[in-house]
Image 1: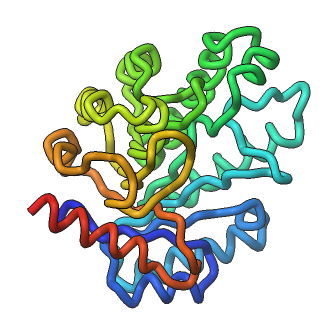
Image 2 (image 1 turned 60 degrees about the vertical axis):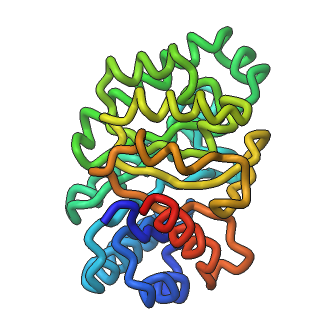
Length: 270
């Protein structure tokens, strides 16, 4: 029942087993560069099978965040960064195929946190950069269909809360992951605007990252520890979506902060 106990872990089986002992309804794999090598993909498939056989109904793969220490941006230029572009495209397609094979979801970030100065240096303008992002996402949407979704970023290339981006997202009919902390940061900690943004995109959101924040930078706080007003969000979420609690953990082998966030939201939204 929404909100779900949704937990996240790497492909490390010790982390996975720590999460599974609490019987989550949603499990999200946080992958890294090593997980999309030939051996890594085989291990990932074994772990997906392991999680599904444990009784978890909803499984998500989070696309690798970095390649060779640099954010794995959808907007990467194939001419100046051919290796990174090849990694982004090949890993995305391979993970989409796995998502289709297992009947699960792949999450791809529309962007990360590129500063405006770097975007303008690379593309000439934010609008030109966004055009590249939407062209790539259109490709992944066509290839992945109902097994792929796109997450909002802090970067202006794909930031929910920006009316231009949201209008384009609606027009392209993307399946979305809405990260509450990213939206809150983009909107400079404005709760009313966060509620409005989530309401506008409600029908297209299929997955949530519930995360608290002070609204200034990427802090990934436990729910109730930041400045997000969670009570009104009950009216603007898509209750047919899934969710996880994407919280920074003190210990990657103890999901305490994720579970506390679930308890907080469940009790608040009774």
